[in-house]
Length: 210
Ligand code: TMP
Image (cartoon, rainbow, N blue to C red):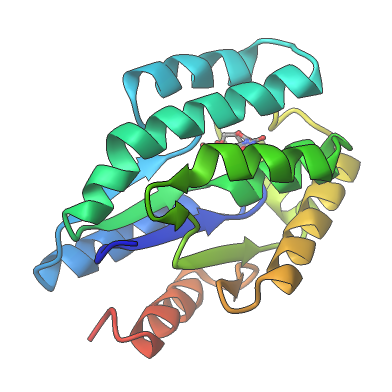
């Protein structure tokens, strides 16, 4: 579909993925690659507006799922697809696996409906857009929660119970089992430099980092 690279970063809140995304961006730029760093929900003015609602306004789960996919459609059209078409590396903090994990497994929303929405929203000229690689930062929910409690005031998702995050984590595990060629599990319950080594190894194996 394109000559760019689409890499997504996933995991429950508090898994620590965002710092490694920034390090990977820096390393790739150092090697001369053009890199777009972005996030979901968000990445465009409209999607960032939707993000504010999604993170702070109570709503039912169908509304939440539809807004996640609406933000994604705008983001794909305006940012992700043009960057990939230009041969860039797109590093995206969360994508559709988060919808399956959070709305599907966390909130118990119908996975078949999410799959239909995924098909509608991610079908582009050349076919169904999926990441080339998904780095799944796996950490026990109680550890992630203790990291979060030391951070800023929690948003709507971060305020959820440990049981919710257990279900979200199980959702990620299921998504990874369904697409083993796309997913790499990163053990995020080790010191930060060891987490980075796993990210680096996954990219080196694919010839994307020297
Ligand atoms: P962030 O804090 O990692 O930027 O993510 C924002 C929150 O949105 C996070 O708690 C996970 C949640 N989320 C969903 O529930 N579904 C989705 O599809 C996405 C992309 C994020």
